[in-house]
Length: 212
Ligand SMILES: [Zn+2]
Ligand SMILES: [Zn+2]
Image (cartoon, rainbow, N blue to C red; front, side, top):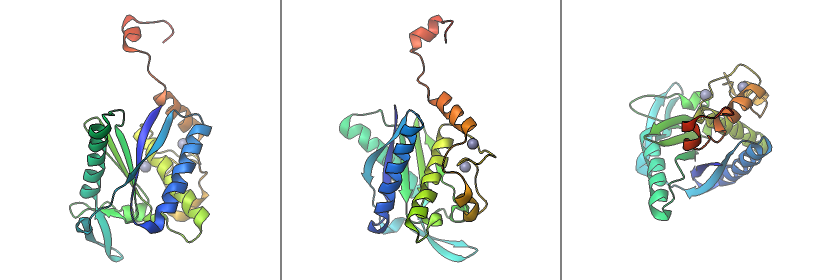
């Protein structure tokens, strides 16, 4: 079973959403038989100094600095490894409440409902902002973020974008996102299962086996 540390990076007001999405993603992963699970790894409070103001078409928007968010998540992985001597966590997924941006490079996440995935050595750091998905309709809000998390998990395991009615099909706008089925399409699911299948032990492979 592959484990992904799941971290909340925001204020009290959206913590309920984080846990709803966490439960729903884990239920989904279990139901479709994917060998991966989210493990709650706590909350990271970013100091106000990590907020930046980025100029967008809609004027100045307050955002978390992309570099600071990635560094904080990476630090959390290292801390987990050192404190409990558990190096089985190599992947971490942060959910932020503010958009994520950078002074060096404007990612347009604010507009495009996309997360970010960064590899640092053997570690994978994923970030998704819930901000672009906001609606007062709680169920819809949960579903939008749920799909966003599945989309990023798909990328994490090497899935490209897809043209089917599928969470791997990126939307032009929120209306399109709401029409997408809250699931991977069959080809994407098969591909994910193939990628997540445990590899046979090294020795076994080294000697070669007609069944593998
Ligand atoms: Zn994507
Ligand atoms: Zn698909």
